[in-house]
Length: 404
Image (cartoon, rainbow, N blue to C red; front, side, top):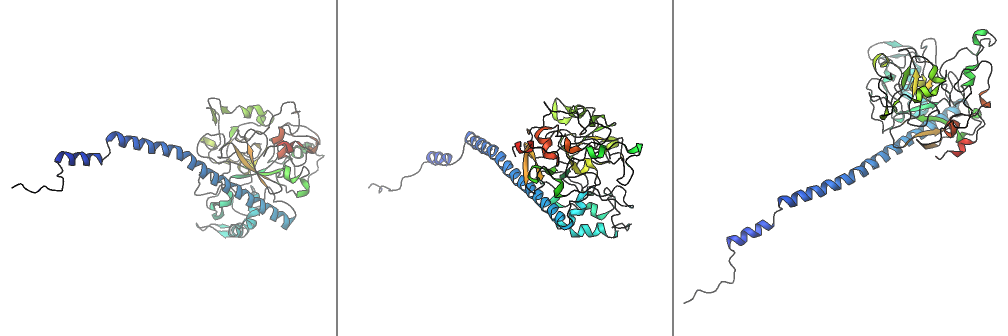
């Protein structure tokens, strides 16, 4: 008798091996998949980074809007913008405009500590407005106020709060943060016969002064009041620090300042050029180093060179940083930087904005010594559309040409 035929097909060992072999990836297939995933990640990463930067740039824009609101509310309360420098007998260096703005920025706690007697954590007693802006022992100086920081700027300082937004001093370089005379002194005195301070008083902020909306005769929508600035990252990048000169000739011969960058690495200062942050210049004012400090290198910008260009300052060491310089608007955003207009609007200015002096009269008191009384409103900015944006009373229409 024959055994009944089985309806189940017997699977041979070879067939079983072939089937299991087909269910696995070969090494080549695995490498192809990994390569595809890597390519997709490479394509997606720039998009993710761009999205993050777009969010940071929007936050920076919002910070500037808040500062604009604070400035307007301050003006509504006192009928003027904050003093560029708050000084008293106790604190000879003084404070910058941010201090006066604190109550209008929801920073009442910091304002109370500064404006009233305060005892630090170490037990040191300070009188009202008695702490120097760079003193790490003074508690308010350690406050890092979020509104003052651009999210795209990674610089940190655990002991002193930084700032990424500077106050516009116009288009002048020489003596923008130094007075040759006291307003109450007799200007006929030969020692005070140069009215250079008036000649460089061209922006919405001026040393030891306060201005009002009425001083913005070029139009609040056409006049810049603040500008962005990147802070120091312990490197020699042109956007985060300033070149140092031991004399003030660069303030009248601006080509000296323009030539401080490295032609082989244009984003950095050239080798051998002294810059703030290194050596004997490591402990003094730098770009955005202290939000409470009034010194121009620290909390001011001017409209001489186009955004993200070099900056230059005069100094012979700590304590000699009063005399002004070229303090360029800079940022860590791609292609430009934010500025705040006097009307409260925020604009993004391209690095390629017109800042040319071609065909214009540069023999002006904006950057040159000129004896005798000079009214700054009689002189248009020699720095193109960009310079016109920084001046408040020069009767210019070129600011309308800015592509913002």
